[in-house]
Image 1: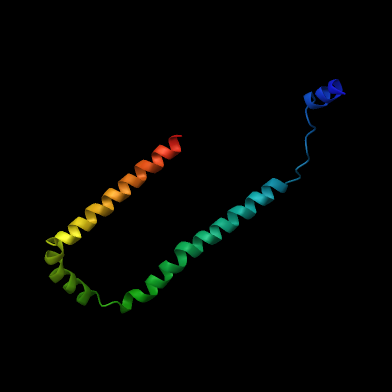
Image 2 (image 1 turned 60 degrees about the horizontal axis):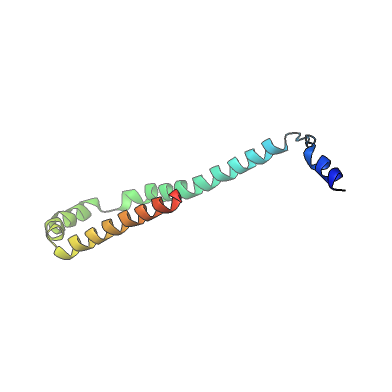
Length: 101
């Protein structure tokens, strides 16, 4: 019994006829990924292009010019930006160390 099992396991399996099935599946996956990519990037870009003429850029830039120096001198915002940068860099280091394992 053991010799028969060893002989069966040692023989290679016969080739399976694909008849283009793998290519069909790969094309279907590619088409779905393209559709998802168009939905993910295309719709927001289209919405932004439609909304762009109605955005009051002159008022927004005027507000940013007046708020810019006040925001740059804010200790709280500087501290928050530092904490965010530190958190992101530590997270990246942690992911790198986990992927090395």
